[in-house]
Length: 385
Image 1 (cartoon, helix red, strand yellow):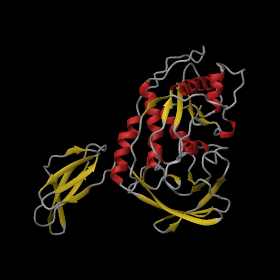
Image 2 (image 1 turned 135 degrees about the vertical axis):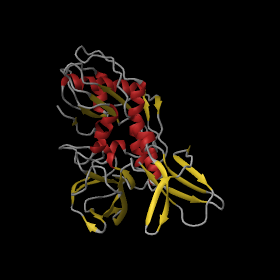
Image 3 (image 1 turned 30 degrees about the horizontal axis):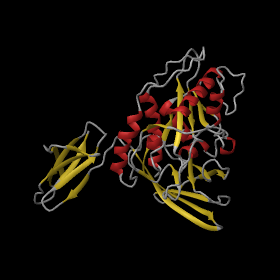
Image 4 (image 1 turned 60 degrees about the vertical axis):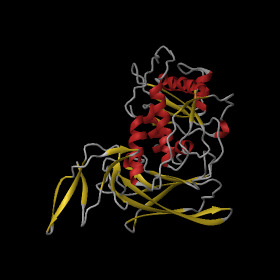
């Protein structure tokens, strides 16, 4: 039956939420996206760490019995939210409010039972409750998908009516501080559903980043790419984007760009959205960089340009680093990718013979490290699967 998104909720239509009680925290530390190893490590320790959990829901959509999601599944959903935020350079410390999550589960059950999406469901809907209405009214909502996978769909933001990527903008809204989430699985011929409360309590705006881009600047795992929509975005508060333009180049060659939205509609920050023709969404054979320039962004009437580089990577392919001290060399590669052996090479004329380096690697933080005393001459190292 496929996966579907409703349109993004609008702040102007939000209802009062009452006191907010923070119940669940799963912080994701800042990610230095200029460091490939740091991006690979975070992919495995945060993104992959939110995979593989069952929803644990013990309710019944047919009889409108509200169940609960397992704590692990709920935390995995929140971890996915905070991972995406950290990849965009934002604080990965959004928390969940238990009362809002309960309303989100009621909303998700309504959507699943009715087989459709609405931010304003009527009391004729199956499993209708006023709490479920609140959950639908203040949330990103999805049908045919649940949990962490629903967060990916919100970031992708496909479909007619979502050209301004409102779901993405609410998740990557810099002041975002408190959410709720609830999912129901497919059951008795009914589709899975998710609601993610995004119009709760906002905090202060962080000092950085100046703008939020998706795909994000720096090294960027191909798994995060907006595969269904192909929509790239640039968000900047107070910016006027009416005459803004975008260029994207690869190896100096311009790519075909189509601007699909210059939205200043108050769904998160003002945002420019475009697509780029010819960008593959599968694992790249080698790291592939795209240089993005967003021009004629008006700040208090002054045209401003921003240039950044997105380098799409396959996190399963680690990279080696070498660090040198007076009497010690450290060879390091990120944790996560498995099945790799450190080899050393012996140069014989124009050829190199590779063999096991025979050096013990130890996990240190987000790296595997091998340390040894340097020897005279050239020493070659590589990782071999």
